[in-house]
Length: 276
Length: 276
Image 1 (cartoon, each protein chain N blue to C red):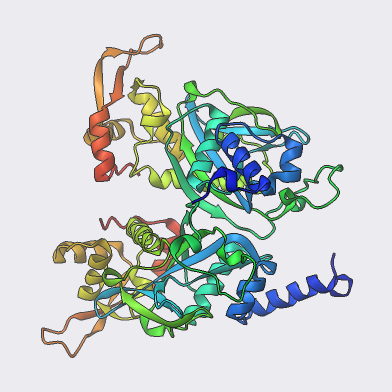
Image 2: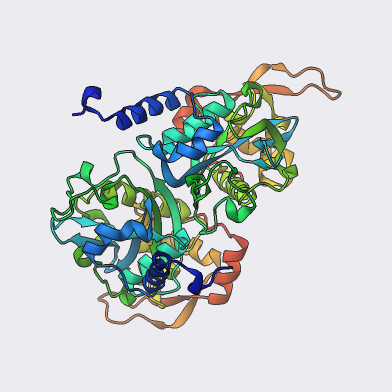
């Protein structure tokens, strides 16, 4: 048992900061580089690959670094008393404003040369000793599927902007972030059979062509229209609504919606979707 | 560029130890607890779930701790200049004597209370300050499939013995190792469709009932004999040999062997096996 009045001042400060960090208040850039190792675990970081779907394109949320203008995945560190899972959720929330999002841990990247110095990033000149920030980091990768229309992208303390990029137009990222993105996509693909991605990535109501386009984008190949529709309806997870989508040039397609009850039952039973 | 004659004595010692460790020479128990943090990354470990198959049972390799007599998964730490993958391979080799084994990283476990003190393990009394060994560890899990008959189990510096256990008879393990084993089994199951496990777990020549029993043990359910044989032959990865297995009470079953050429082609193409 440990009471706050029996703690040393340094422990009290740690407790105070950890509580603040969990509520979304974080150290500024200078504090993080100088003192971050007092609050966070050394050598371990998290990188989140956040996927969205908009205008028939699969998108990923990226941050632009202030100094170099180079782009990277949104990431962060693990507080000394925080679970890895909670840290990933906190980082996701602070970049997107979203809560209750399913995060999927897909791989941990551990190249011995995974440090900023080896990738052309210098520590600020005002720091005289080597910062923990420049040490080797092993990073744990998570992917999340989010509703594009609900996200308010927010840069972190190191970045000038936060924006969506088409997955197939992503530029050269810092460190090994392109490889992390590629591995996340591969994991997403192999999860397609066990997890109906449409539920998270599309708006509540969607058309069959929109759902098909989503699967095609993730799989990177065209699918047969009739066969796709047959498989989706065989899953028995979506309901066709009475309404049709209006505004298109062609014949207005029907709108569909995931059936929450059937969806939850299928998730529990681990239904196989057999989409690829 | 860095030459050994420009190094400080502490760096030279680090280099020397890392070279030794990679060749299989490791610190003794006392040195590891006192000085391990000079050579290994803090807060990060590796745990290997090593599966074998013998006497129609799926088995897992476990270590018995010297002091408590409790059992655990074989694990270890990551040298400061070593990749996570290389560390996992080094740990596997030092426990089994095997080389060229496929290791599959399946999950990273990051509960904030994952430290030895929280799980009833005290540091030795001779150590006056808190050892790095008692700090919180995030552990990266790998599973491997090995040929039971080729393994020479070897305890590490903390353990009195190293032995195979039937997967369904594993006792209560230290820390969260039972949960790690359960997650490894789950990952192995979901990989059955993409990876023909028989190649690694069975002897070179095997019978169809042996292969079926292996799949049944991993899946934890009975499979239909004719249907199983049909699916396996449809994969076109095994050749039926002219010989039959002798010594059984029943009609001697045919022996089969994986076809190396077809197997490698299938692995490259990512064939689906559809076994469950």
